[in-house]
Every structure is written in structure tokens, then in C-alpha cells.
Image (cartoon, rainbow, N blue to C red; front, side, top):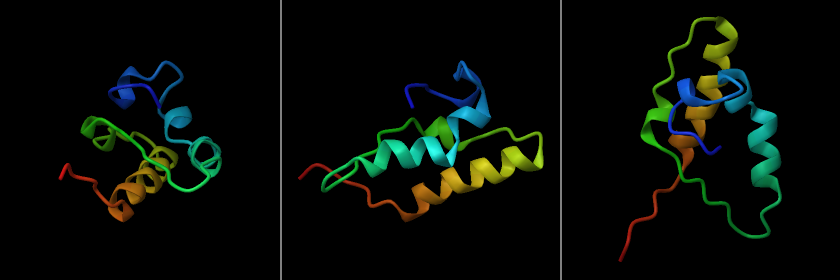
Length: 71
């Protein structure tokens, strides 16, 4: 997930927003999973229904996330 935006992703939007890829990355956590992302990742320019489906699922993580703020 090391990219600033979907347009910068070397393998394209489908690979970047793949639910399987995110699942593998987060399911290995033993007690907590922290995802650090650029806000631009959530501003996808979808051109197909499949891209909308992938971006929607990715954005759902943001909706369900708990933001950690410094004390």
C-alpha cells in the first residue's frame, strides 16, 4: 500500500484496492492493525463498475476506522 494515490499505483487501481490484498496484510496482525494512508487514496476516479466496487470496499475501511490522535 505504498503509494500516494490510485493514479500513482504501479499495478493500477484494481491491484491497489484489492480486498484480498488488504485482507492478507491485515489478517497477520496479532493484536492490532494500523493502516496509514494518504487521504488522496480515498479520492478514486472510477471508470468501471468493478473499480467502483473496489473503491467502495476500500472506503468502507475508512468509515469503520478509529482515528488515533496524539495525547
